[in-house]
Image 1 (tube, helix red, strand yellow):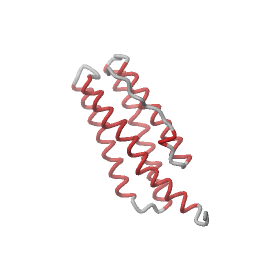
Image 2 (cartoon, one colour):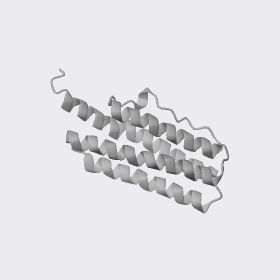
Image 3 (cartoon, rainbow, N blue to C red):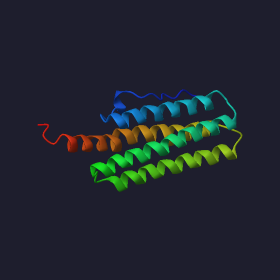
Image 4 (tube, rainbow, N blue to C red):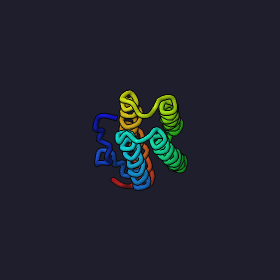
Length: 144
């Protein structure tokens, strides 16, 4: 990876739900570690290991988020779940890409930027904020 990617959890990504936000911070840390491993020209093995580390937490986080949706009766659960499945498929494709090549290439960097970082940040700002807002409204019906 030859260019600098800004992967930080900032105020734009805060949903207001402590559980979700805490998990997003961890998820973004793992993405940063993965990207750093790729940028440092680390071995293919290290890049794959970091991708596995990211994949493992992604799986945990999505399950937790979906449990929160289930518990609160969030009406868009199915659609949200489909988005999570898309992302998991993307991670699998990145895994296959790393297996097929010597290691992280510039093309791989572009794929990570578009399919991991941009996707996740967009997902948090839309889908996850919507979930957090729904849960907040359910828990605070008389907030007016």
